[in-house]
Amino acid sequence: MSPPPATFPPPAAIAGVLTNPPETSRSFSTWDSAPASADSFARSTLGNGRLWRMGTPVAPYSKWLQISITQPNPVAGVAMQPGGIWDGAMFIFTYNVKVCSAADGLGNCSAWSDALNATDGTTFFGSNASSPPVLASNGQRAPQGGAHVIVNGLFAAPVTTDFVRIYPFGACLWICGLRAGLLLHDLPPPPPPSPLPPWIGPKLPPSPPMWPPFDETLNPLEKHRYV
Image 1 (cartoon, rainbow, N blue to C red):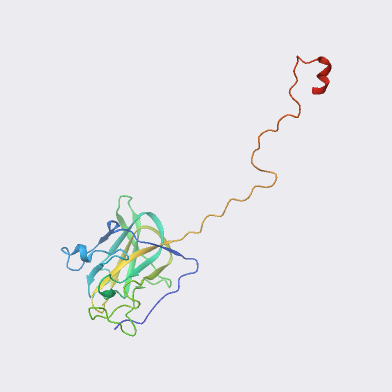
Image 2 (cartoon, rainbow, N blue to C red):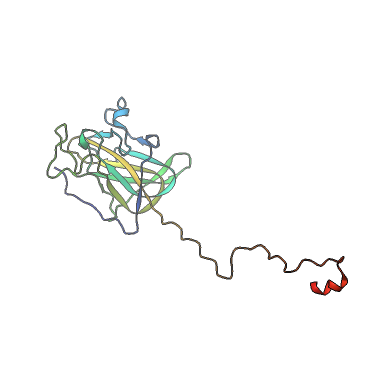
């Protein structure tokens, strides 16, 4: 039986831009039936036709998916999606998140910190079971909204980091699995430059002289016209 729906409203100041780093930017603690089935069960990008599958139940902080970002970015949360097979019947209810708080610049992290949700807790929520129940094509209960629905887990505040680790935990209705992406903080664009005061404008070319320059070869009687 699935837990009751639990969602947290995002803080008003936070907006997320969905990003979906490639599989080459991801690593796993392990996966179900490892290592022979990496192509089938160690694929976690949003929208792909497979999933990261980790069996059931999953003990807290025992299995993780790590997503690397090309450079430190303010991360606002995690985008969670059911697995891409069997109509999404492999999905998770709950997960924790850790962010790298000390990277060495060489692709390694030496210290991790808990990401907090909007109520300063550490539990984030994935999919809910369909209600009323909808069965997937294999007879298992499908998630609410189907395989393509993305559920956002927003942080209490954006965290600038190089790496994010997602730790699913708990029992699943069938087999635990997921696809995931990140929500990068949408920083507001810089304000436009202030307009120049009216007395300051673009530099104009010099005006041509009203009279031609004085020529000494002219009749001296005409000189008064040029002075």
